[in-house]
Image 1 (tube, helix red, strand yellow):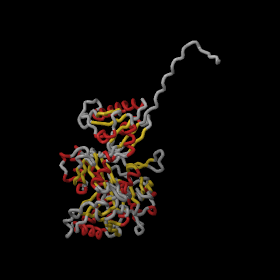
Image 2 (image 1 turned 45 degrees about the vertical axis):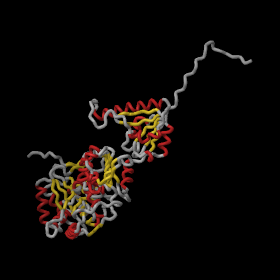
Image 3 (image 1 turned 90 degrees about the vertical axis):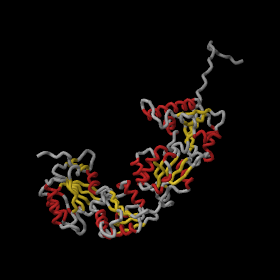
Image 4 (image 1 turned 90 degrees about the horizontal axis):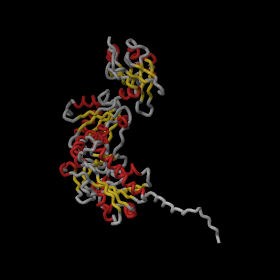
Length: 515
């Protein structure tokens, strides 16, 4: 018989171990048609202990209605009711504060189920992480519990499918925009992109309509309401009555390649400034004009900066035929073409705008519409790289004597220098013009100290960019070519080597000393 030893007291029963935490699922339900749920979404809902979904205060939930056939009587349902939707609130933190408190409280309710070991499936229309309410739960819970997100078909994909129009093709860029953006921001982004979908219409529809009009994209735009759901409607967006537009609708500007926009109602010429280098310097308006043109006309070097687009004609030429380029562009516009004349920098600064307008002021071109779109100038780009050498009054002068006599250039240099203006000198030298920089330095030294800062900026924004700062007395003509711009400081311009910089920072104070 085995001997038993006791301690003289009764043993207490051990506490039950805490259950393992449950798993959180964000379940994408697709755009509305229950048959568009993925197999994985159906599996997760079936296996869940808790099914959670958002709703407005009226209690109806679109998410629940989509998944209704998969919700069992023994499911625990957590209805997460928004305290506000679009109305005002007296919450001390305003609308955003009211929603933040709601999301925090809702996450706490779900966390209680997860801590009890229950699996929680949060239902989300479309895709959970695409403008979805689930993402607010994800942000508050995913770092504490095992989580899986089940993707769903988005309203964007559903809208394109219902229209039967591709969204984007080849190298086209698709931009997704919320209609709640300011009208001007929407306009800029619509002008700059190839294809777009604008979400969250409803009350924002008038602003979206205006942005599509101002960006020139309205003739291309389609309207899709409740894609794949009861009450679905599609129409050209221009024909839609704003009073009939619900929140669950989108504006679609489809692929220009697969769905070419309507032919222009009339021809026009747009002179586009591309900035000093590549696409980072393009304004949204210029980017849109280049994309929507039927024809591009320009100097080969500048034209090569613009991506090739199917169906768009390109007319490249040499740098010294500006009048001929202008005539070609205007002739094309007279035939109903939408022509973009591609210019480097800003087209109004020693560039193509003058040539186009000069020809356009003559018959038979005087009735052809001409617009000029600004671009970042070489002077401004170089100044930004160096600091702010053009921070006060300055003059812009071209050293090229191909179109004006050197005597005129010299007189203007003396006048600007004697007025103590900072200077931006364009076209300082080339293979055939080698003496102008030395002569300009000589003239400027009559009015400026030898240690006046000079910025030599070459190929700013390009792959061989070089920006150096030297004293005026050390300006070497052999280091200057047609891709270089010179910025000459005034008597007040400062040049300082700041900590961590490999060259001086240059700026001209805005305050000028009194005599």
